[in-house]
Image (cartoon, rainbow, N blue to C red):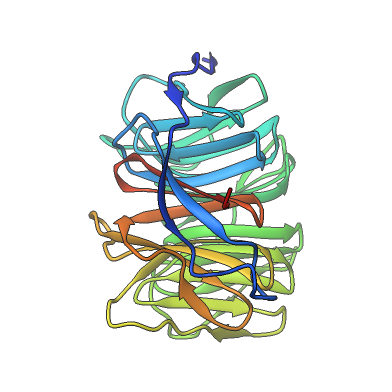
Length: 321
């Protein structure tokens, strides 16, 4: 069953928070961003965010799909049987090809949703496990990560990747059909070269997310202050500072010297959240105060960045006026 986006219910009301730690005089950083909280109309945990442009942004979370059209946020009905869905990831190749994945909270059956530019529909993936992340390169090259499961969709047929089915996957990202990265709860990083999967063992903590700009610029983030970077040849660790143990859940950037991270001091429960900024040389907190735990971050440009998290939290970073 397909359901259309509901009429606008949520006004994008902005409340100034605090400026970033970056400044316009830093040649390796962006212009100063001011972070403002946005009324989301929900208190649900928001887990993931993706957009095709500044005027087409999707957010998913606990029994929640939200859409932003550049002016206002709206609530979108979740297709299906009416059961509670915990959506863990959202990604698209265009405004007319958006995917959301997760699981039904009572029976823990997998949820795969697709938006074709008009309405959302529920699809059967053939999988039987909880789904945690989604990524790809096109409508005919989609990857879905889950518990002991990695699925691929070629636009017509779903297939399970047998060599990747030995871990609980938390995230997946691809730069091309022959360059796919996935991360796991055991701190594993696995790469697909178009033919098969190979694992990288680094003794890292639980990894929650992976994202990149190209095959030579890939980031992975996880528990206990873990931030990793690949230049296409090897992975290195970017160490954080501070006495508080932080769990990093999301990463996005516009260039190698403009990368944003979100974190929470909690894992399965609420914690204090923070937005962090990397200018190509150093990592710093982008806010002077904490927020509820944050899990997803995305931007349309260096001057238009969004973060989402616990309690229906949506935070927008934009240039000072």
